[in-house]
Amino acid sequence: MSEEKKVVLKHKSVLDGNVTETVHKTVKDNFGGKIPYSVWNLTKSKQLMTLVGDNKTGRTTDKGETLSELNPDTVIRCLKIWSEKGDKVFDPFLNRGSTSILSAYMERIGYANDIVPRYIKEVELQKAKLLEEGYKWAENIHLNCGDARDIVNIIRNIFGIDRVDYIITSPPFWDVEKYISVDGQMSDMGDYDKFMEDYAKIIELYYEILKPDKFVTYIVNDFRRNKQYYWFSGDTINCFLKAGFVIHDIVISVVRTPHISGIGDAIYKRKTTLKYHEYVLTFRKVS
Ligand SMILES: C[S@@+](CC[C@H](N)C(=O)[O-])C[C@H]1O[C@@H](n2cnc3c(N)ncnc32)[C@H](O)[C@@H]1O
Image (cartoon, rainbow, N blue to C red):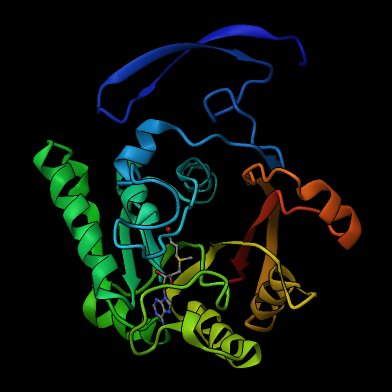
């Protein structure tokens, strides 16, 4: 079982061609030689970054607006584990659009929504670029600009579907990242408890739009504010449990914190560690 051997794998590349690669593999599996252990340390592959239009630098657009930095390799792994080909996959908080673009790439149908028209426009442009380059699967990216608090209407009346097979997102973490201000922008809600009320209501709505025995994945992190630790992952878990979901899986995913020289001493004084991980929380709707 543990003996390492060389195996030749054939898989589809992002260029829609079949590529062959030789990898070291210890156990037979369906994940390209990579067993999905519960701690993930995935580097961002350049090809996937290009596919989701993430070839800009760092965390902002050229206009200085924040764009999320969801690791596309994490999304691909989630899609492989918790969804199937042909599934309808939904992200209520689109931002850069990684989840819907990669869902379509992985032969699922990607549906996504965001409150900010500019983010929708950017992903529409990326979709048009992919189609122009001959990536036909990009037709399976469907977008809507709206408020996630209205997702039942969005799914039923705008996308015209009854229920989805998988929900995957990295939601707004209160105001930790600032997005473009528009009416309904949840990162503008000043009060954490008020934010959590609406955050919980949206999670309750998932019960209506998800098929039974299917999964929701939330990629989240905890954070500190004014010396207070916000257990955002725990609060998220509680929202899902209250809404009737069960915990299906919890993964720790390494997020490379940029090296900040001289921070070591400060950290020892503060007696806190530097965040180097996030949580991939997966819940199941019981039938
Ligand atoms: C962390 S980002 C999402 C990351 C995204 N899932 C990805 O694939 O990169 C959070 C997004 O939530 C959006 N948002 C905030 N309030 C919203 C609301 N009421 N309805 C829909 N989207 C909202 C923000 O505009 C922002 O783009």
